[in-house]
Image 1: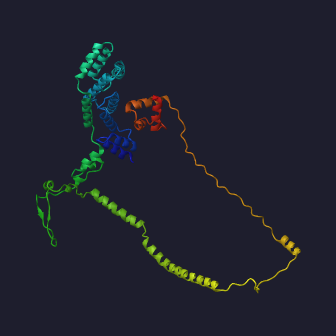
Image 2 (image 1 turned 45 degrees about the horizontal axis):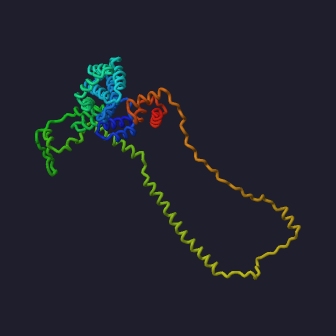
Image 3 (image 1 turned 90 degrees about the vertical axis):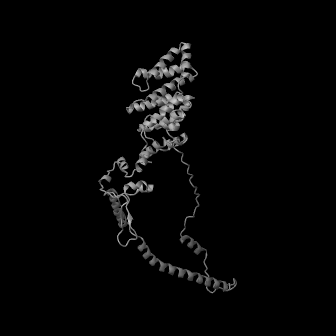
Length: 417
């Protein structure tokens, strides 16, 4: 399938409320585009929607990936995304069984790295305040208890995530297929021609104004007149009238090209029917002669068989008039044997059929995993989750050279065993 067509289909289906397994099958079947940031953002939003009911630290990675895409496209991070990221971080800190480890992983490493780097769209005053409070709570149980009570009265995490996803989708333009469907419903089709880069010649056609409900009588010889309806009456007509063919120079040019192409094909292709009929006239008489001969020959054979059956068999005791007798002695027998050429006796030779062994399928040469590949695999699993081996392979195709999604799965199983 063409890469552009595949991108149009995936961009359309990722926006539809279809099951995740169906979308995964489409992603595995159709080639992915590695340059379309809009499709990547839609795919990340789709993953966030599937995890809203049970927020995990993986949501933080998804939000960070969206922020990175927006930063590349010079898109300002919206406030709803900042609030959602902060809420997920606080929720995962309290839900983690080890509070100290959660504070270290989320606030000291993730958020601390953002503060150190500075130019990160997810940073906000609320996020920095929570970071300072959690670091203070590591050595003070009362501060930790106060943070828990403060978090209980906050807005639910799911509501903040849904608000962010809704706002982010509204900012994304419609898919190409939806845009084509909208422009096809226009009366003149001018937006559709502009979409495909075609010249709009509709405005060059001069139209004469027609009076409302004016009538033109037909020429003599016709049964009735023709009614011309003004443009104001088109709203009351059937909807099918909106899609009538317009006589434009482009359509006339296409029709002329079609006629010329048809004539050229007719000149190039020779009709085989006359030649086949002439050949049939020559072959039919020959077939008749063959049929007549085949009818006569069996009759002659039958007569010979009848004559042979009716003839009397000769007795063995009767003398055969045509028989001849010869006499020879031993010398003549020897000379005859000497003069007779001797042929080598035929020797039988056993021929055995060679057994062709089934060729064994060639195996791939084993390639050791490098440290770069292992680190990239860990980063891919952290970003896209366990099980999305095909997506990880497509995202890091330049690093996982000569690897398959099965290789990534087996390597991850060995690394985590």
